[in-house]
Length: 305
View 1 (cartoon, rainbow, N blue to C red):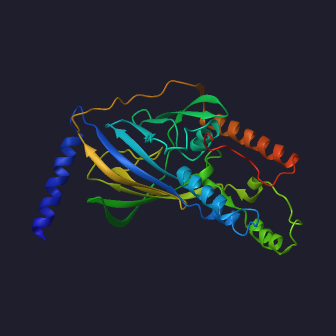
View 2 (cartoon, rainbow, N blue to C red; view 1 turned 180 degrees about the vertical axis):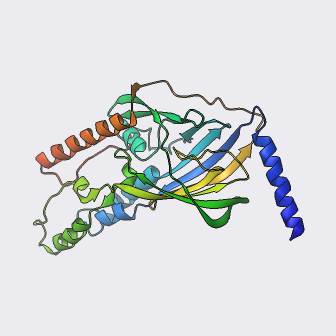
View 3 (tube, rainbow, N blue to C red; view 1 turned 120 degrees about the vertical axis):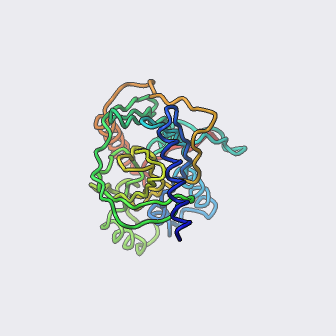
């Protein structure tokens, strides 16, 4: 027991010394996965959908909701970016709709954080337009809990907080409770009499979500995935109930140093202005599809055919 304690102290001391080196840098790989059960339930029992169609949709949903990100970080700055992957033969590259949806699922663009200045910048594409979202970092009121666990060999501690939901993050959508009951009633109606509704009408955004994070003081850097920060150690896991982002690999002080700088492309806009732009366009989509009497809602091509 004493030997284990001494070794833990030595490793922590070495990590502390490495972090406070003048040219310190680290790389962390994160796997992000968002639950798709709510969306899958929307298609269950649909007589117009063949098994092949359902399989295709599930594969595309998996591509949208399961992503790999790379966090390059120093003592005060970081860049969080989706890992670039080659498409399988026949799938083609990402079309405009796919890039837009990727942005709304937390992917796409370069997310830059400066924890010294408490600011961030992220370039996003929406509706064919480039935006540069620049704003102050969220001021999370973290509550440090007593629970601990190991992640990749690092001792991690639990912290929780509550944050407002971004209107531009599609991952936060939840099914409307009243729509669940309506859907049951619709399945009882004779074929052809089911009420046609817009897909987006079945979902809503909560006002706030509870965030659970796991950080390690063994890497005393106040960084983390996406815009998460403010804890006395690197955040290795974060969850909001639907999306879990988990660190799968860490490399400290590699010989190859990454260039950590803020993105510059796009029309500069605040987070509030960007959210309002996305919300407005989504409402236009909803009304447009209602006017057509369609039941598919927003139809977005996920790649070239």
